[in-house]
Image: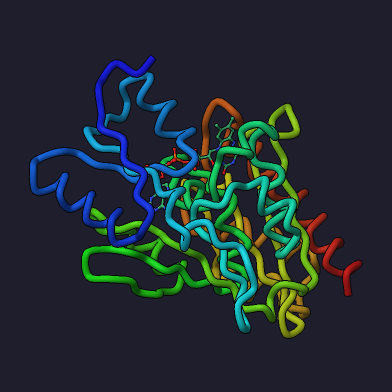
Length: 276
Ligand SMILES: Cc1cc2nc3c(=O)[nH]c(=O)nc-3n(C[C@H](O)[C@H](O)[C@H](O)COP(=O)(O)OP(=O)(O)OC[C@H]3O[C@@H](n4cnc5c(N)ncnc54)[C@H](O)[C@@H]3O)c2cc1C
């Protein structure tokens, strides 16, 4: 049960959604954008999150798009993970999000919800980091398109929502690998997830579960692509150059995460060599 009342809106246009948010702000109400709702409902039930106004974005056509337009794959932020998997339009993305939660939850969880999640994992972000994806943001100043990595680093301003993610078609069919290791079940939170893509004979890698945020690192890719050092040494150096402290929680100690990361990186490099 949710122990507070809220007004629920389901606008059919982007401008209506943005205006509804602004109206709530001006009347001193707390508003949130709502997509699959799985995270909001979980937090609301335990009083960790509250809202006076809930704006469901699934009625906005731009947020439900999933198609190739010109040279880009356009993915609406409110498209469910199941729909993405079944479309097979971006195999690396499909294979990565297929390991998030169980099938019933994936029917509800949206890609925009995953990208904007308060959890540290946000595994759906990894393929987009590798593919230099762009995000379309809607807000009171209209729409703007920015590199998704910039959006992740800087965050959205209050009242802004992620409308779409754009991926250049040239990335869609590149060789890839995506490996997830959990503590127990096939679909649990990741101890380590590594997604990789080969572009212009260089391996790109993105990580979830290792640090408090999903990331891609230029330093790590330089190390991994250095043919002058052995594979074992490259992997050791990657683990010495992570962009933040390694997560230590109920799922795994930092030491165990590093051990799993070493194995996953070995498997990733082997898989990528096998692709070539
Ligand atoms: C059973 C289960 C297992 C899970 N396992 C994993 C896992 O293994 N790996 C992993 O990465 N995640 C996992 N998750 C987390 C899940 O991906 C996130 O909680 C995600 O936010 C849920 O998406 P949603 O569409 O239901 O979000 P919602 O509850 O609708 O929204 C979540 C947050 O994002 C904001 N938001 C949603 N859409 C937008 C948008 N378009 N623009 C701006 N803000 C927006 C909302 O305001 C809210 O703050 C799991 C969740 C469940 C329920």
